[in-house]
Length: 177
Image (cartoon, rainbow, N blue to C red; front, side):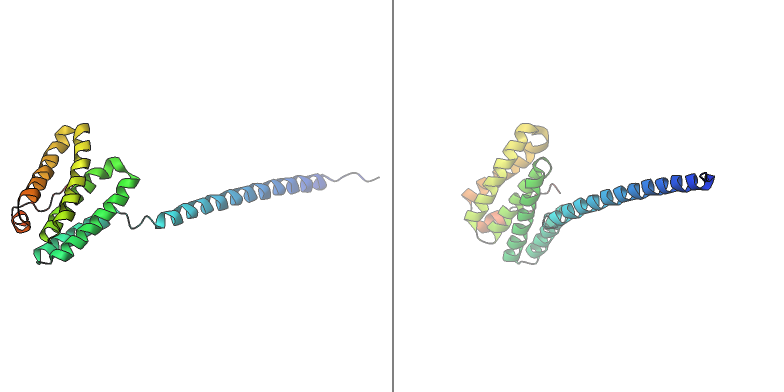
């Protein structure tokens, strides 16, 4: 009978170590693949939210200001509507952060709609801004009372005066941005 050589035991130990390393590598790669899949899935799900970014809302607000300065009241109202739509989407995602921005955007939209001759739309927008600002002012009166009062004054002017007078009274851009 032949005795096992010391090399045979060493080869068996190396094979066991190799199998363990392969198993660890496989588990690591499988875990990595799952993590990549989850991350990619999350990334793809967020692609539809790209339209709702604070920067895009600010850009629409700037466009509204440019249109207004150029005398393009309809263009200013359209850009302001877009900014408001983006802020609505952002507010659904984070109401605490974006409610003041939505209220300011609605205030601006009211001014733009009034300038464009849509008094009913202007009233609806400012009434919504007042509802949001009233809620905000209850929670933090020091920060939001002045903007609430500004929106109330705009509503009063919309109710009392013709469109052209409201547009020329300095009720322009109401900014939180």
